[in-house]
Amino acid sequence: MTSLIDVIFLLLLFFMLTSTFSTFAEVELTAGGAGQGAEVSPVPPLFLQLAEDAVALNGAPVPLEALAAAMEGGQPVIVSLQDGVTAQRLTDLLVVLRGVPGLQITVLGQG
Image 1: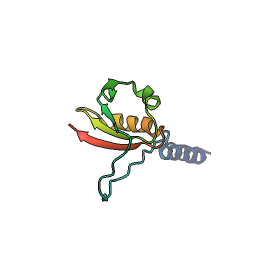
Image 2: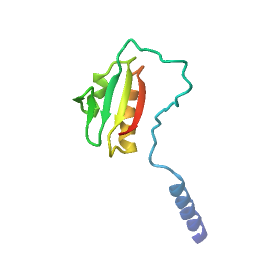
Image 3: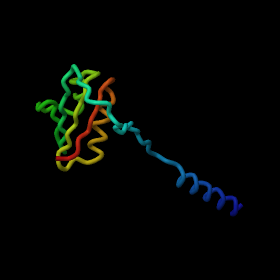
């Protein structure tokens, strides 16, 4: 009987250590390829500035939650990262932008 209890505790420990309790979201990123010349878009691009605690769309502050409603699909979006922006903050922005179909997103480096 004692050995059966030991086996049960070992199985319990094994299943607790091998299970995962969190799920990870995926954000699709595509790398730029060789271009065939400059294509001029008929729609002017949207300029999005991402800071640690603020988001500005074409110079006007916008809450991150209302960003998807302020954008239309099929537009090119240029995202500029300010100093101090973390990878998690950028991922949160890309998840919000993923909800808008047809956006062409370009992320600039920090500057």
